[in-house]
Amino acid sequence: DVLKGLEFIDEDMRQRIRAAIDPLMRGVADKAKAFVPGNGEVLSGWSKAINPTINYKPFPRYDASVVKAGIGYNAGENKTQKNGFKVSNYVYNVSAAGRIYETAGRNNPQGRAPFQQIDPSRPGTTFGPVQGFEGKKRAREYTYNKSTREYASNNPFAGYQFVTSMPALTSQPKIKGIRGGGKKTKGRLIFKAWAQDSPKVYDAIVQAINATAIHFNKSTEIKKAA
Image (cartoon, rainbow, N blue to C red; front, side, top):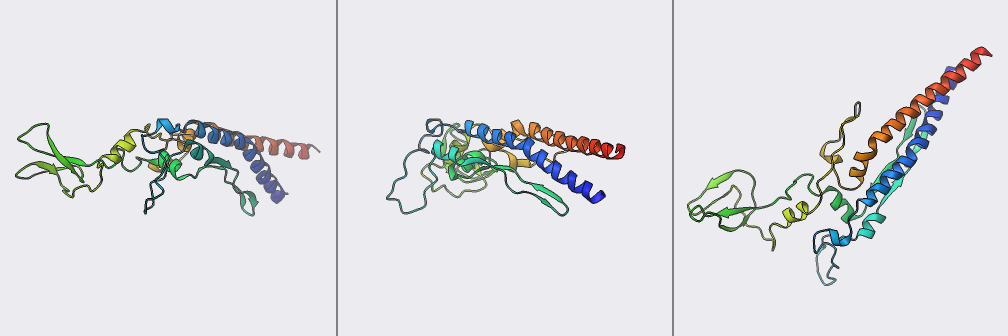
């Protein structure tokens, strides 16, 4: 009877959790699609057609319709096992441009902006960008950051301009009993949608678990009465 009772709890809870979170997770996917900016809303040039004559792998072109098509919901693996059950519903973002828009700036909020050489004798003037990091060093002619390797890019500030043209990354809210994910769970599309809706999903899971407990207790009381 004990084993049968545990099996009943596992299966009932699995079904209740899946039924509770399925529509909510679909809502997360729909909300994420709504956050996808139009082609005219991203940095100029990102949505332009790629030159077919280039002989190198180009930066992924942005196409709002492709990004939206790459966002969806999957019920994942939902099955009962010997020691319990597994529910792995998830929302995905699979297009290259979509992933870039989602995560750009996680590691470098300023897009690895190069610093500029400054001539102390002429305040406000710059010589050119250098690839560096915080911390200044003095030389005879000018002040510059520690690294002096020149940028080879035609636009050394492209990374800075690219990241800062986008909305800020959204962090996950602090929910009691739920471990935070750090910068890996910051984003602008599915992670932003999850940040807004995750409290509802977690609440639905708790309610499903409580409903299983109530249902099991009632069925046990009926058996005792019989």
